[in-house]
Length: 328
Image (cartoon, rainbow, N blue to C red; front, side, top):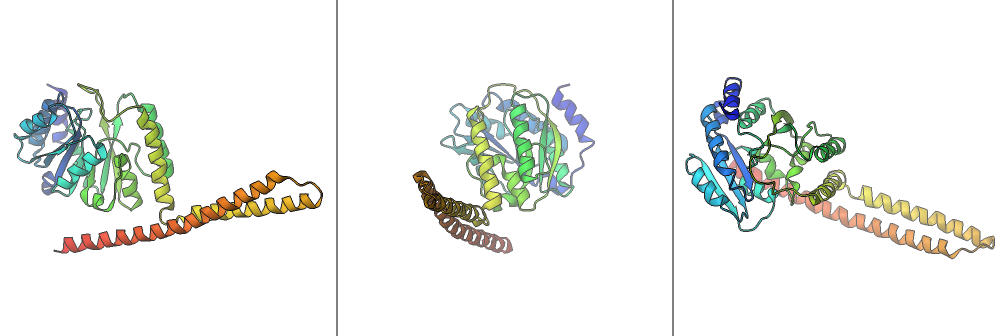
């Protein structure tokens, strides 16, 4: 008996799902040049759906593949009752592929699932079952050996410290209520952070352990050492967004006033030294520099406050339009 089959047999008796939930979810699969893994992926998805009585959507998003991923996905997906194929003409990135899949979904729940089979489809009913505990998002915590364990651990530790999220792994298989993604704007490579952004808006987040398996074929397409540095900068950007986007004057205005104050004190010191016969021109240059920087930052704070006000108005307008559409 295969590992997937044993897992199905073990979980089929333990996972209890609401009948409506069995069809009210979409599995979004972003993929780039994963043709080697797709036949096995679709076979295991089909077996999991059949074994657990699931009838959700499968949405495969080809993110600009140059191999035969789209053709194989279409061929394999034709065997499924609810299958959609979405394609990007160019490789846009995992975040954009995820957004494309979410827009195509017609269900209330979205499962983000990778095509490399490092997570088995058998985790899907477990994620669905956990949402019945009242969570809006359920994340999988990777259990097993993997190359980027140190980097991933550091990233997740920083995220817990900065954002106070109650989960230990933000970059793994997960399920999320689709309505959340109508509220959150995800920028490029921000698929790692939508749990953080959702938690900041008060949504409940849960976590379960999921087994991580070695990649069966091919190599990771959404990786690279350069992404470590980019991921760190994105982490700082999200921290700044959550901390200062509503009141940017707290950062820019306060910093500007501090610099102006320092400039004033240095100016007083320069005058005293001059009266004592110890003129020191670099101090005057420092006074000018601190004054210009302080006034500039304070003015930038006013501009940022205007941008924050416009952003709040746009968010209110978007929420109003969304409520009207739901009322129709």
